Image 1 (cartoon, one colour):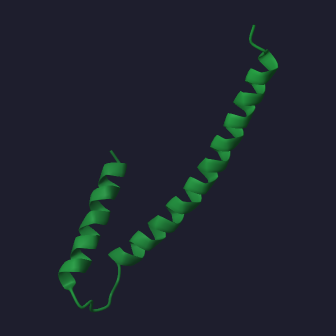
Image 2: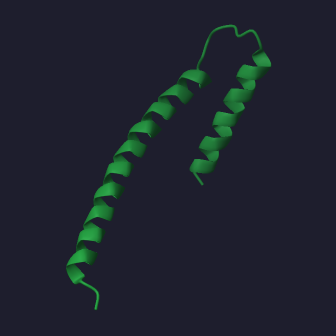
Length: 68
């Protein structure tokens, strides 16, 4: 017969881990967003303009997919 206290402990631990991971994920998402903004608005001459345009296109593609 399963022990209900073990199940409750397991569920509580899983919720705690999920909350911790969500906080980490949210913090990393903010960093990524800020870096993407920087790359989209960079106003310097890169050695390879094609590379900077490629990065900007990739960012815009991912952001448009995130908004769907």
